[in-house]
Length: 275
Length: 313
Image 1 (cartoon, rainbow over the protein chains, first blue to last red):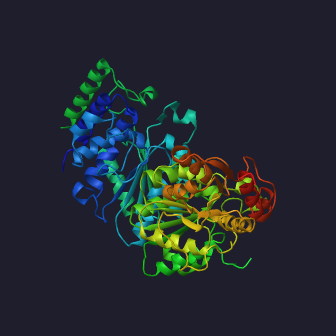
Image 2: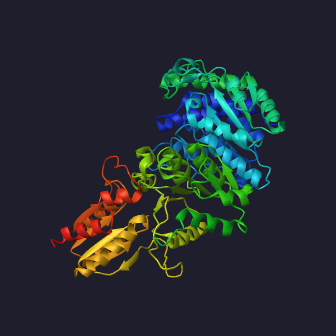
Image 3: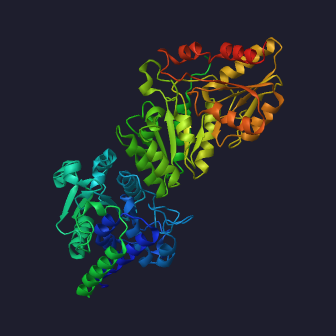
C-alpha cells in the first residue's frame, strides 16, 4: 500500500504552492480536509482518469467547494491533469482552474461553491444508483460551518427517507469558520445526535486527519445497510503546521514568505516522520 | 371556454407516454403532485417518481444529481417557489453544472389568484432568463405544450417551463396544426400596422385582440413567442420591421420579461414605438386570473385599446 499518510503531507505542500501562485485560497480547510480526500481518492473510491465516464464509477461531490485547492492537488496526483497546469494558472486570467470546483475540468462531477448544495445532489446521485441497480457509491464532503445551511437538512431528510445506504456524507469538523469558532458563530454540538435524529447512521472519527481511522470509518459506512452514513471527521483547521493550525484567520490566507518557509519546513518534517 | 384540458395534464400525458420505454424519465414533486396533475404518473411509475416533501431546494438539487447520473428528471413545483426558493440550485446545480434538469413551474403567473403575492410568480421570466445556460419557455396552449415537452425529452440541456393552473383556450386547432419548431416563434397572424408579441396565456387574448382590430381596419400581426430564451430575435425583427408600433403582452412583472427582451432587441437593431403590457410592479388586485387580467387590460379589449393608442387611432 502506498504511504497515504506521507502523501497527504506532500499534497499539502502542493496545495500551499497552488495558493501562493494563485494569490488566494482557503488554506485552513484545504489542510483539514486533506486526509479525507486522500483516503477517498487513493483507497476508498472507484474513481480514476481512465474511468472518468464509466457509469459504474463512484461519485464524489465537494460540497465545501472552497477547499478546491486541496482537491486540485489530489486530482493532479491522481492523474486527472498536471500539477504544473494548476500551479501555472490557478486563479489567473482565463484559467480553467478557478477558486471553486468546476465540472469543465476532468475529475469534477459538479460545480459547487455556494454551500449546502452537495448533499441534495448526492441524494439524487444515490437515488439514480438505486434506480439503475448500480452498485456505485456516492460521497459528499461538507464543512462544519456549512451545516448551518437549511438545504443540508433537506438533503438529510431525503437521504433517510429513501434509505440511501449507497450515500456517505463526510463532515470536515474542524470547528472553525471564517468568523471564528463554529460554536460561537452558530452552535452545533452535538452533531452526532443531530444526524442520528435525522435517521442517519453516524460514524464519529476522533482524528479525522488520521488515515487509519478514516479507513475504518469508510469501511463501516460501506457495510452499513438500510441508511446513509455520515462520518463526522474531527479535524484540525490548518493541519500540518503550527503556523496555521487552529487559527480562524487562516480560513482564507496567502502565506507570506516567512510563513511559507515555516509551513513548508513543518510539512516536510511531518512527512519525513511518516516515511 | 371550449377547452378544459390543462397544460399540466398534457405534460403528465406526454411523460407517461414516454416513461414506459424510457426508464430514465423521472418525475419529482415537492408535495405538489396533485397541483402538477402528476398523480397518475406517480401511481403508474412509482420507480420513476421521487417525492421530496415541501423542500424546493432539495427538489432541484436531487434532480441535478439524478441528471448527472443519466436520468432525465422533470421537477415540478409551483413556479413561485421553484424560481425563487430554489433559484440558487437552478443556477448552480442545473445551469452552471450543465445538468439535464427540466424545471416545470406549475400554477405560474397569477394562477393562484386570491392566494396572494407569495404564490404568484411574476418574476420568474426575469429570474430564470438571467441565468446563463438556462432556457425559458412559456407555451401558449395544450398543443404547443405537447410539442415542447416532446422536444425537451430529446435534448440534454436544462430548461425552465412555465405553465398556468387553469385550462386555456386553444391557440392552435390541433397538435398537427401547431407548427412547432424548436426555439422559433410562430407568427399566428400577419399585419403591417402593429406587431403584437405575446407569450404563454397572453397569446390567446392577443389573437382575439387582433381580430377586434381587423374589424376596425387595423392590421396587427400576432406572434406566439413561447421561446423567451433563447428569444427568436429573427422573428422579432421580422414582425417589427413592418409595423409602426410593437406591443408585448405577458403575465409577468414589467421588468426583465418578454417586453424587456424585445425592447433590448429593438433598441439595438430597429428602434420602434413600443408598449410593454404586463402586470404592475406591485402585488396584484385580488381576484381570479381572468378578473386580474381584465383589471390590468390583459384581455382582448385591453390589448386592442393599447394597440390603438400606440397607433394614435
